[in-house]
Figure 1 (cartoon, rainbow, N blue to C red):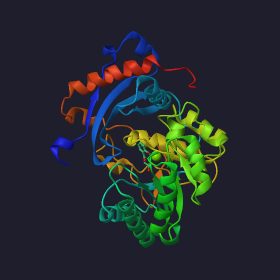
Figure 2 (tube, rainbow, N blue to C red):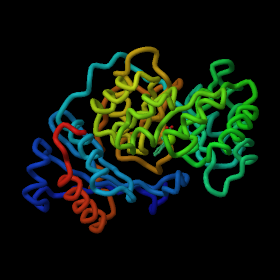
Figure 3 (cartoon, rainbow, N blue to C red):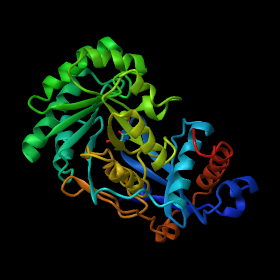
Figure 4 (cartoon, rainbow, N blue to C red):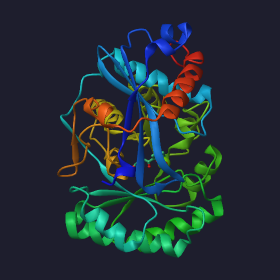
Length: 352
Ligand SMILES: O=C(O)CCC(=O)c1ccccc1C(=O)O
Ligand SMILES: [Mg+2]
């Protein structure tokens, strides 16, 4: 790791926060802020920053993206507070299977990444990013399918994530093209092919491949609209944007659909909370999208990386020694101090 890419970890002194914020954070006895670079640009994101909160139940993470306002971000704070104050629900398993996440990289790099994924049988591929042609996406899908077949044979599954980029007609063309590029490897589902719930429903009725809803759950006023409109087969559940493990599991259960727990590119501290959520989902587990530690350059603790395609259940804590080794970044501390005040102001008791 070169010097410019060391993760930064610093303490946010509680006394610098307003009385109202300290009151909202009752039970929290330590607050850290981190900054880490990403190895590969991912949905336009090149570095991650966020807060780590400690309470008697452990550490939680609140790392809303910078384009999120205070109201939406306050759910991320609610999730971190839940992790600090309450133990996660009883796990139904000791390990959770995970997918390898394949960003927009060359087919050769994609092939190598799947081979080096720690035995993941499922790969999730980012497709339809601006400026990437259908044929380039298909070449990456084919390379991933080759790597999966060579490593896990008949267990292999591919997921595609379009992040809402397609019009319905484009999805009708692109999805079959990608399914054919995957050859014998089945497409488990396409995540958020289009932006709106109605479009998801239309695509779902016109392609053979199952549909998963991500943004239509985690950024929606009404996360259950997808289920009512039969717009998806699977719901993508992200702990932080849904306001915590319990709130996320409630959405999952009420949807009645298949459940995949996924990350929001947290550090391994936040990822371990995602693992706790995935471990509590009833039924045969689907691979979770929680193997994203490898997308970060460095981490705030020993990175949570898969072995034999799975992650162990168990909460992680940041390495406090990093605090002293970290280059001082007062701007980071004051930015997140202010953000914390904004999020705290919009916390709602009991969520929505
Ligand atoms: O699901 C995964 O494999 C990784 C997580 C992921 O893709 C993601 C991470 C941060 C923000 C959005 C997304 C997404 O699913 O679109
Ligand atoms: Mg997604």
